[in-house]
Image (cartoon, rainbow, N blue to C red; front, top):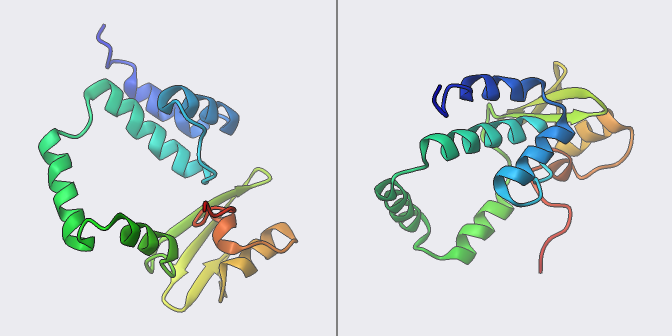
Length: 152
């Protein structure tokens, strides 16, 4: 039996693994604390990491090509690229945002002129977060699009 035989079953098991166990796996596989993103993000990154450790990651030439493409976009200016990522307005139309809240998964679809949650249109993510939680939230923080605390 090879090392790769159990990988498909391990990946499939991520879907039903409790969130605290996913976070434990994250700590083991990445040697860092898991980010405050939604469950689906954890599942997809863990699945990638499991495969990466088993089958290998990107080839060095692929990494170099991606770095070159990134430099073409922002001239290699790390401050500019971070600023663009941190201050981008809204996700691309059609993007689905997933958030688990008190055991219930909520799916929001990004529209050209707002958002849709449970078949209803909303102008802001904050309004959706308020409808879900009953309290005021920054919608971008609630859906994992922005860290709660900005680093200096």
